[in-house]
Amino acid sequence: MGAYATAYERSITDPTRFWGLAARDLRWLTPPDRVLDDGAPPFYRWFTGGELNTCDNALDRHIDEGRGDQAALIYDSPVTGTKRVYSYLELREEVALFAGALRGLGVGRGDRVVIYLPMVPEAVVSMLACARIGAVHSVVFGGFAARELAIRVDDARPKVVISASCGVETARIVPYKPLLDEALRLASHKVDHCVIVQRPQAHADLLRPRDVEWSEAISTALPAECVPVAATDPLYILYTSGTTGLPKGVVRDNGGHAVALRWSMENIYGMEPGDVFWAASDVGWVVGHSYIVYAPLLTGCTTVLYEGKPVGTPDAGAFWRVAAEHRVKVLFTAPTAIRAIKKEDPSGALAKRYDLSALETLFLAGERLDPDTYHWAERILNRPVVDHWWQTETGWPIVANPLGLERMPVKPGSPTMPVPGYEVRVLRPDGEEAASGEDGAIVLKLPLPPGTLPTLWQDDERFVESYLSRFPGHYLTGDGGHLDDDGYVWVMGRTDDVINVAGHRLSTGTMEEVIAAHPAVAECAVIGVADALKGQVPRGYVVLKTGVDTDPERLREELVRAVREQVGPVASFQDVDVVPALPKTRSGKILRGTMRAIADGEDPPVPSTIEDPAVLEQLRGILRPAP
Ligand code: COA
Ligand code: AMP
Image 1 (tube, rainbow, N blue to C red):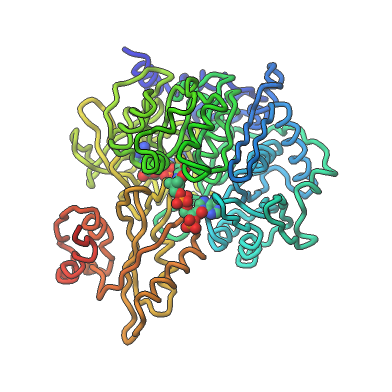
Image 2 (image 1 turned 60 degrees about the vertical axis):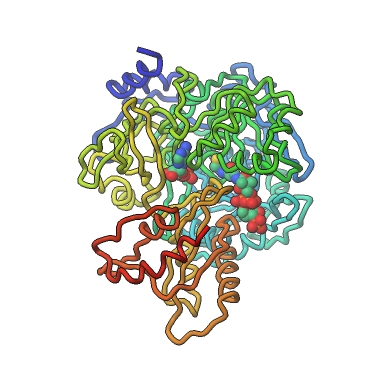
């Protein structure tokens, strides 16, 4: 058996031994009593009885082992013309001081802190500072609007929010403070304090005594030491889009998370302490949490924090410039970023301008990697390009080509094989296992490995209902696809109302809520349609209230503006059609799946449950305009 097959089999037949061994790579303050605590299915806990501190393992431990002067964080910001390198010692100093400042503001173990920051070092410092004092952070992506931030504030109920005066989107300054103030006005929960990073590009007006500047907060702070927390204590909450307008608060624990991420760096990504890792994502997404912040630092690597885009900052060679300059060994981004580069530099001429000799692998995730993009990236870079599949809920890859263990043959379009710890199955609607090659619901047999979500924030019931009740004994991923004869997993797309726009996970339900609130709209549906650059973009279909006579172009502008202002620019919502009616089942459910299939160029059968087939016929031409 090869290294991959051996590791995989061990992880499934004896998970306690497998993950118990992996846990030895961390510094425990109290060793766990049990590796896998399976006493209360369908809830599982990892490393119960154990105590550690994630920040200790990410910073202090490496300093104690002699890595103090090694670069921990490289901040590279073409949009502000700034570069700064933080050694492990320097980063710990900043983190300990800010942890002390948070303490001074009344934040203690178990308290929540919301972080609404652009890609600045303070984002990493804030996350680690929370971990240091046992507080639970919840980072909200900067591209979300005030209303989305308010929803998260009301659910997480933070004592403190950390934000900045602005973000910089290529050449556009995005003031964050007005969005924060609006969100806190909308939220019912009242926060004690906001800590504001004043950036030179824009000044934020403070509301005293609630608001305090970052520089002020640290000026009087005393550095805080790491506090021991239980392995099962929450490290963070990360909200992700579900099928309804209310996002799901994915909880991540301390122990399982640290063990899984540490293991993944060596065995999946092939990284060793001292290597440079760059995840070109955003700290607001799970990729940013896991592979900009925690995994590289838990491994003693150097991580790159890039405040820029793949194109336009200043050109389509930006990624290659950063990779060359910082001697990046592994680059991780979303396929959409590669498509954006390909569109501007189809021959890959810009990649040839840089010395990419340190770059060994390009990892891609966040959406399906189409074979064209895969082949292009491989040709331009002439090194392995690895597709891997995972979700906010799992926190680390479910299916990958585990280069650190063994390089498996690539099948373009498939993210390769299940990662050790994950038992991937494909089920038919009746729960029977699908045949090889037959599409079905992709599920993971319980228990999930360490690092995956133990539950949703203060909502065990929704956790069970959303993920564990459809196929008892299994976690429902929400993705559809199949396994082939060689055991390769083929992920074909979401089976629910979640869409992936430029690698950003969004809920069509949230957009529908905003559109339905317009006074002219009787009902609406939003679906994701294929887009050559962003993978998917949302498109809305609205039915007007009887007797309403409105200019369709004006209505479109109003709805686009409403989604931008209430969900955020990141939704990229541009297209709305007024239609006479929406296709529904006899029980009144809108047939979004059928609409989606037609828009994607398929010819789905007319569902037997349809109320009026003529409505669907009428819509066909609108859903799929002639090429
Ligand atoms: N704060 C404020 N606004 C933001 C934002 C942030 N953090 N992030 C995005 N936005 C805005 C953008 O400025 C843009 O606004 P516009 O409509 O005024 O132009 C809008 O949200 C859409 O942003 P985006 O989806 O990033 O589109 P883009 O056209 O600016 O760039 C890509 C397209 C493909 C280059 C870009 O989407 C990209 O780099 N994607 C990779 C995503 C990724 O890394 N995902 C993480 C998973 S690994
Ligand atoms: P997120 O929670 O934002 O990471 O989004 C997770 C979703 O993105 C998954 O459920 C998939 O639909 C999609 N996704 C992520 N990676 C891949 C991949 N490699 N192939 C196909 N889909 C992917």
